[in-house]
Amino acid sequence: MNNIILCGFMGCGKSSVGRKLSKKSGREFVDMDRYIEEKTGMTVAEIFAEKGESGFREIETEACRELTDRENLIIAAGGGTLTIQENVEILRKGGRIVFLDVSYETLCERLARDTRRPLLQVENRNEKIKELLEKRLPLYKNAASVFINGNFSSTRVAENILGIL
Ligand code: S3P
Image 1 (cartoon, helix red, strand yellow):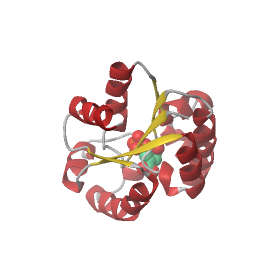
Image 2 (image 1 turned 90 degrees about the horizontal axis):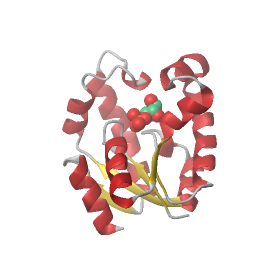
Image 3 (image 1 turned 120 degrees about the vertical axis):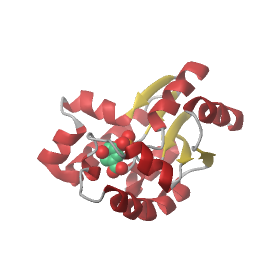
Image 4 (image 1 turned 180 degrees about the vertical axis):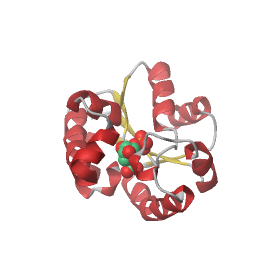
């Protein structure tokens, strides 16, 4: 039950903060996307291409269940995990949800050269980020019980999380 679940938009630092938190706390870190890739033997991009976003979301819900059956983990959710209400309920039951809040400008900078995330391989990437962020911000805020300013180094953000939890 005492898992820590990091959530927030793509590029908000869930994975790098998660690794730092893991080192500092001695808890195991699991990145949900990497977990899905290992489980399916496919990359996230391959899953999107073959099964569509809805196929990916089904696998993601299974991953939420499997990971929250375990304890003492630091889990980095995907940027879209909390857009599915079922996932919100599973993750809430399975740990404390921490939202890493990062500004639109910083997200655009961090994601400018991304080639890995299927949802961002579009002509006007910053418009897409804006559109998704507007839809998702209320969902992250509603699901999380801890809010952290993520506009700092991953070390500092990890220290701030440990200070609050
Ligand atoms: C997604 C975010 C990605 C990954 C997939 C979909 C999203 O995770 O799950 O590309 O819908 O925002 P990261 O937030 O770790 O990039």
